[in-house]
Amino acid sequence: MNGPDKPYKKGNLMKRYLFCICFAASILAGACSAARAGTETFFPLGRSLVEDQKSLPIPCGIGINYYYQRQGYDVSRIKLTPDISQMIPINPGDLNVKSRINEANLKLDVWVLPFLNLFAIVGRVEENTKVTNIPFPQMNSVVYKDEGNLYGGGATLVYGIKHFWASLTVADSYADLNKSDSWIQAFVLTPKVGARIDTPWPGKGLNVWVGGTFQKAEEEHTGDWDVPGLGSLKYDVKLKEKEPLNVIAGFGTDLWGRVAMEV
Image (tube, rainbow, N blue to C red):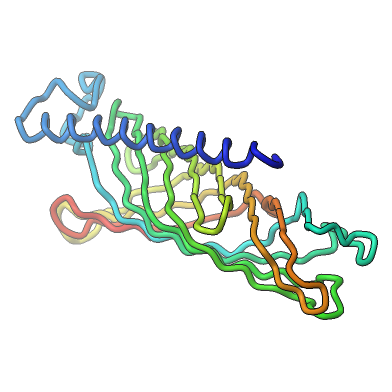
């Protein structure tokens, strides 16, 4: 992914995710219009297969989400221009990379089938990455900060028996960072199992769940780096996640009407 291939890939990824968002938004608009008109034959399709149709969710939804992540990364490639490897050899495996990500996004979703939910997200992401153990006598560590727009989408499959349920969410997202041709791409699988617990308040319940995440993430960062004694270096660095598997847990509850919260 050197030379002209990088902006080409970046542009194609942006077009792909923007298309997915526009497609999901058009489905959502149609579903909401049908819901307002009281149409019972629109989304979700196949509602006749459900015995208790009152338990079906409303066909469309809007959510606001905040996500925070701290994770170590491996450096899969590093390229410096001019090449200083003869003077100071750099082994990517010796570098210690820690990253913090703050993300806020708007989520649009629609229940296409009683057990299948499609969604699109658009938002903003901020990244703070610290690299240590750099073999430069003048500079042992460096902090990289960047931010940009986030696009993505995915699907959730659900199945439930009485008070117990299971779900699998597949999501793919792309962040277009501001600095040069820098970008982040993440593919995430999230299986969950949970239970809905009745509460003393009529019509309100508490969902508790445990699960895991499998995340395949790639990052590419390019730019200029001023190193004392060496001058300006152009860098091209590619990162990948160090620990793709993680355990998660959470809960959610109904607030009022059609508004719910999940942590």
